[in-house]
Amino acid sequence: MHLRDCLASTRFQHNGSCTRRLKVLGAVLFLISAFASMSFAAPDLVVQSLSLDPSNKPARGRAIISFSVRNQGTESSAPCTLDVRMNTSDIDVLPNDPPLNVGLSIPSLISGSAHSFYFLFIVPADALPGPHFVWVHADVNNAAGQSDHDNDKAYIPFTVDAPSDADLIVWGPSVLPSISIETYPSTDCAVVEGCIQAGARKLLRFNAETRNLGPGDLILGNPVGNPLFYFSPCHGHYHMHGYLEYRLLDTKGVVAAGFKEGFCVLDTLRFDPEANPIGVYGCDYQGLQAGWGDVYSASLPCQWVDITNVPSGSYTLEMEVNPEHILPEADFGNNITRVPIEIPGPTPTPGPLPVDDAVLVQETIPSVVAPGLSIGIGIIFKNTGNTTWTTNGNYALAVLNDPCSLFSTNRIPLPSDVSVPPNAGNQFLAQIQIPQTEQACAVRLRMIEEPLTFGDELIASIQVLIPTNAAANWTAYE
Image 1 (cartoon, rainbow, N blue to C red):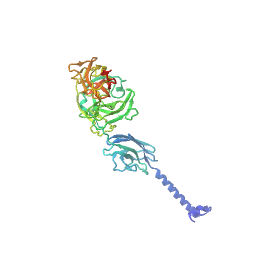
Image 2 (cartoon, helix red, strand yellow):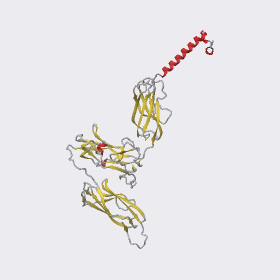
Image 3 (tube, rainbow, N blue to C red):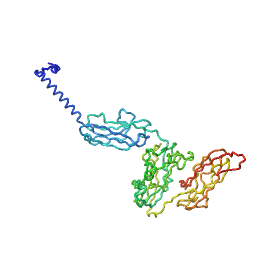
Image 4 (cartoon, rainbow, N blue to C red):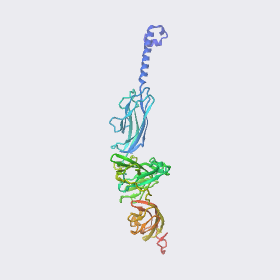
């Protein structure tokens, strides 16, 4: 009797042949079930929670990747390795695809456990702009003992940006280092934000001037809601983390370090005479035009390296702008500038830092004027700092913006025989030439100790109008 007849018959229990056949069938089914159970009694690694920050960068830019590898099998996995690569395919990753990090170790994982990964990677220099995919391939050496390799790989989209036209450097000649002894309470924002320890500290202070050498602007935009910025409760305004880093080096390496949180990246001074003569970027919409520089004065908070425990001797101050490559640039290779530093043996006498400051007292610039006139004006600034203004000290009144070319020069100097001590004032005299046509002119003036401006800024608006009454005899109205 065939097996199908035995199964269909109601009398198979009385048939010895059927009984034997059914016993054989039962044994086969048992073996199949046991084999199936054994095939799943193995480790099974899966890549989870894959993320990138940010999800776009130009070639040579830096981003952070994080993910975890979990054993969802029923047995412990053996130690194995993992590769992270980038390509332009969302189908598969190959061993010859550009590596971001390869040969990472995955430890033995018991059933249900996971191991997390978090690291910085650099976008390959030859990566072309456009859409890419970052792949994570677990158990790339097939050493974990898995029976299922279908979910060993995972990918996430990543965009390689076109290179930026901006190119940032630190301008070495403006560093002008000095050493001072200063005391900071624990409530000072510099202490709260980790720039310095509380107490009396010996500081190496210096200016930091960043310049944009590229043909295009660096555009950061409004800091509110901008992922490049964070709000500082202590200072009450936005900071950009990691704009500048400072390192003091000896022949063996770093002996002290500092950093500067960018709080207002803006057009401070124009170093390229061919660049746009008018500043565009400010604290509300930040950036740096091509041919312009942004200056952080030595007197600002965190504009130092703490050298309290550094012995006297010869060192190198290494300054790096955009150290984490979070800002797009055409060239990251010129971001570091080095300046020789000499730390003398005797401790400098504590004293106040030199502070330049000025208050606008009076000005006689007319608000309405007839065309074609030459008018003398006077502007009085009071010295509210603790330095003395002299011509030899490179002090002057700077014309920062003059689109109508009212002034014949961009500097109104102090007389050669005049010095302006603290709490004294000086009247700056100049002749301005009014245009021949009706138009609105706006000028900006501010005190300067080359190359840094300081104090109040005078913003004057002049309306050039033809008198409506031909018989009117007037030249200007305040």
